[in-house]
Length: 397
Image (cartoon, rainbow, N blue to C red; front, top):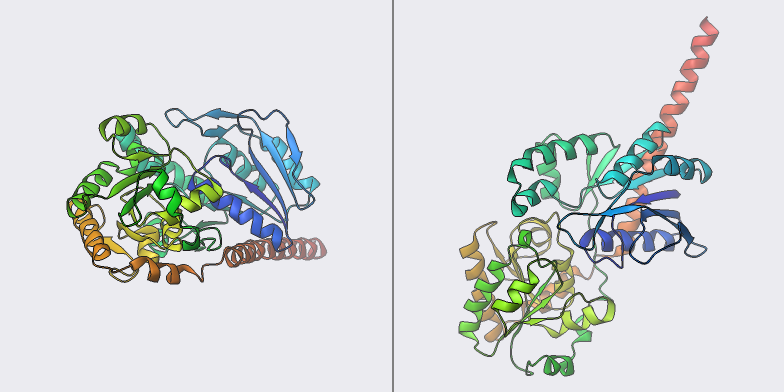
């Protein structure tokens, strides 16, 4: 197929949307599809567009910074350019990953040309507003997202839970597209005792990990509370934070014995994952939470709320530890249980690794291409039927 992917975020930016789109693109190319990526130009990029290699093309457009979300941008509308790309490359289907101005212009361009467009639902923006002092905008954000997604031929979501929630809130044509994890990139084999010693953790001490954006919407006070309870059981335990964001400076100042690495990528990230022992993920604003699968693939005991990726892939007490959604005290108790199990020699991370080994990124890309292929076939069928109706009408006249 000839596919156009449109996103407002892409690596080297580090977030779930960027990495999910990158993984999808890479495996679509491996499957032989022709892919064009449209995204905002990032810092220090000058060229308007670039041919990345013979397999896929990248087109960069203008963007503007997102207020209070350093390092990320909205892509500015580029409807005219996207219409030209669709015509010139005879695009079969369009995928819009983000609901910003660039995504909106791509959605309208595809609809105007009769090309099927699928949208991804990656972020609960309505839920974010209350964490940034604008709770009064939650309802308006939900209305906007519903309007946006209902213009598409379908909306792709990673969990049954999210599909049900969107359908209940009048989002139409919601389809399930499960996520995957690269179990070769994230693996217990990358455990590095020398790395642990470098950051001040001895071989037998439990290392507790958080990976993600260090920001108010991630519910990070609960990481601190949970770790304090865990450290009461294991005084030699250490807390490691990987990521960056507006809450990092204050956390570093308040918790000087915690370890903060900033953003890590690639092999460095995989080594830090595998060198930890337990993983805390208290966020309540995820549509999925890719880091949950990365921690499981790395062989860690995961403690998370019972929703999103954790609900889909963790069996409580077998492959991780779950707490009822949004119950902070229950999360702290679950973290304490995880530590007790770990100290007692119960390594839930071994079973967690086995539980995610079947989640193939190539399978997800194949399912994605199949879904968009069905949309393209449906469009061609409708166009053919309309053509036949026009011919019949002309004949009758």
